[in-house]
Length: 590
Ligand code: SF4
Image (tube, rainbow, N blue to C red; front, side, top):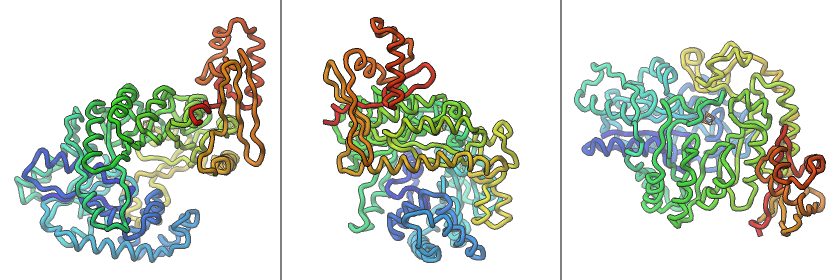
């Protein structure tokens, strides 16, 4: 029998896709082997209370110190101080005593440790992804103390390459590391252990191997998660979201800051037919309509076929996906109709010069365009980040960001986050290009691990020497402007069914643009004849040449004057030769 374990802090309201896919794959290939998927994080979330768990799970620096205090009690004082500093800026953790959280964690973890017969497993595998490092190490240590002869293997995004090697070198309790995709190496390891009960003598090292055609993977098995959830009783019940994957890796894979693809070699995608049937089967089996695509990026070419197929299934799916900013409006509309309610868009910056440095392959206008489209009623709701303090960003990037922010006021605010250096990212690989040097583990890990481990482990989040203070000052004005934007958007969306901030009503020969303002009356603008047509033509970005060619009877100087006036009123946005109308159709809302 095999146990696959996921410890805190993944999102509690969805089963682990890592455990679900691995369990299904092993059970399919070795039907005689029983596999149990232990979602210990759900047990912990239920004991801690979902709001508190959720908030902790959203920050590595809130999550990692807690189990670290149980692992290294001699350092608990420093961890407590560090944790409270981070918690002071939060909603639920603020004011909660660190010691009390640790005590609850210890009690529920002990309960979990005593409720499984660890000696009955021939192999125990830990999936270690973001923020799961200290909690996994805690459980590994405790389990190994109880059953020293049972083999322990780790895998997951936090164990790829040197990250995993350094863990195995520092923690003798870890017997094997799977680097990269889990299915084939884990299967090989289980076979080895089965054939050689004296596995220690083997010195087996799992090879990096990937499934070529991921359509051949069996359907993920989430039975254990749902069984656990129903055992928690009605007080702890909630409607879970099911994770699904359409692809592995990223077809773009060029962003300078990104280390999300360390565990994959290349890009592979499932067929849309397979994904649709997977969603339908999982929905029927678990009576769930909410799904999250776990892909770094939905496959661009197949999205339309996927959406049409989902629509034909005639189910009220509620889906989440990550997409690129260049996704065209017709695909966004198809997504909305298919039930894709929320999208995370790779915005990252509102300055084209900075986007070039980030290697996003997009412009500020691309970003503004998708943010605008997503304000259209019926289209997915957009969330996105604005990366501040990127090491090579300069005055011009900040100035451009501030200018574009003035045009973004009618759109859902972005989350402003400071840049962090990811292990293995292109910036990490070539730091000098970005003006940084002296890379080592992020200094916050000093508050989490003893000094010797801080030096010997390779951590996911890295620290560096460089223009950090200068960057913080440089981006101060953006930070303030984003905070104002968020406040204003919240005020304008306080009613239960808020209208878009900037929209239009089309009268056939004329157009009424409606501009909602915080603490002021609605402002309207009327466009007639060709002006109306130009505004509608520029619903997607157009060059000045395209506009003048489309309206030859209108003198080009008049067109230019009209466009200038519209940009001045921030009803349109201009970048170089291109123009974009910022209002969205109100008709769909009515
Ligand atoms: S940030 Fe997203 S789009 Fe960019 S390389 Fe990473 S996964 Fe791909």
